[in-house]
Length: 195
Image 1 (cartoon, rainbow, N blue to C red):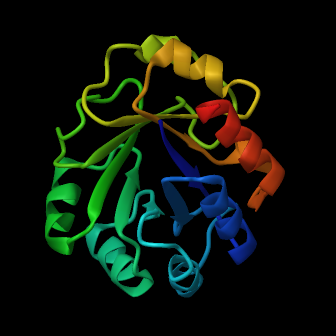
Image 2 (cartoon, rainbow, N blue to C red):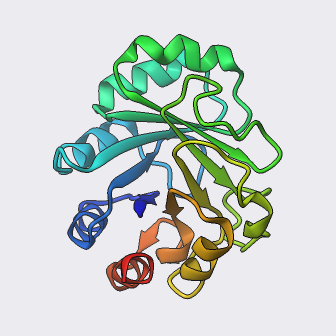
């Protein structure tokens, strides 16, 4: 099961995620309690080994702003969160990084429909940290997709059983406060996912 740990804000959190076995780490460069500067994202991305995907997370920014931040930070994937138009993905296709589309369950749930490489299906109110009706998406998304929204070490195994995703994405479920990841919670989450 593929695991993305999102919203990392310092080198210790990056190390904890990598050491626990995360497949991808998210660096938020959009409005959020977990927002970091492009310069900080570049410093954190430089700490991540090549086998772990670094994902720059954006919400609502225009493609040129995303392009500039992705190039400056050196992330190897760009996540557009929310209902970005297809044209935003088309405009970034030549960037040479993986594209990730993160949407709620009411959006088009076909991975690749917007030329993205990976789809994330999130809670109706993304960023709330609250569990939602994960079973409602079972069998609907196609291709490589991650379940997100309200996941934590205590509920992720049940959420996986309900929704049957290709992978999972967690942020607040492994935090002690917004933007502060707990290495013990990261390890517990990974153990709950992979056993």
